Amino acid sequence: MNDTDRRLGDGWREHAAGRLGAAEAVYREVLAHAPATANAWCLLGMSLHDQGRFDESKVAYRRALAIDPHFSVAWSNLSNTLTRAGEPEQAISCCETALANSPDYAPALHNLGTAQVAAGRFAEARASFEHALELVPDNADSATNLALVRLTLGDYAGGWPAYERRWDKAGVKRPPVAANLWDGSPLRGRSFLLHHEQGLAAW
Picture 1: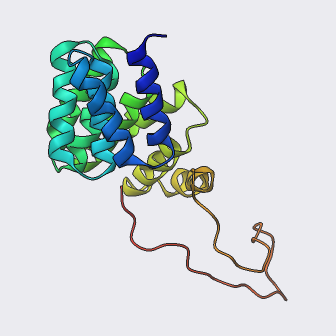
Picture 2 (picture 1 turned 90 degrees about the vertical axis):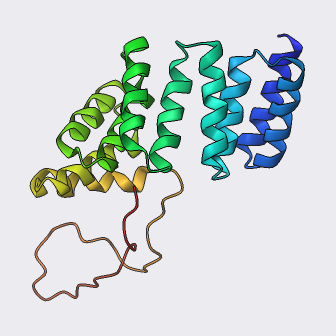
């Protein structure tokens, strides 16, 4: 492992631990010495995105892509940032480029579905999330988003059962209620507690 890769690994550990400012500093340090490192620009873009600095993130991803136009991860990540920045049609185009280079890259399919939802293209989003789940069946984020798309399209029979996958998402916990979950059995002679779960949904 060369020194650049080692330092990028140090930055990623800071990033994964949620120390985004420290990660950004490491990535910028690497780029000061090796400005033609596409992966460093991509990682910098990720740290900026996670800090909500979307305009700067877009610049970083585009620097990565200027160095390596076939960098599917950077295309997909740029799509995610463009969606968050309110540019879903451009985001869709970026994912399409990522998938042209890497047809089975599941994160790009997930991000494509997210961008299509933001653009109001729900039937297309459904197909994108379904394809993503064919590749990575245990992706709870894709499964939950697919369930929400099904509900939006009026597929309640398929959408509500699929929406149970939301509990498998990282960081999602059930409300602290001291009662057993209803298993669908008859309620005659029994009490039923209806408890709120969440507020307005956000994609």
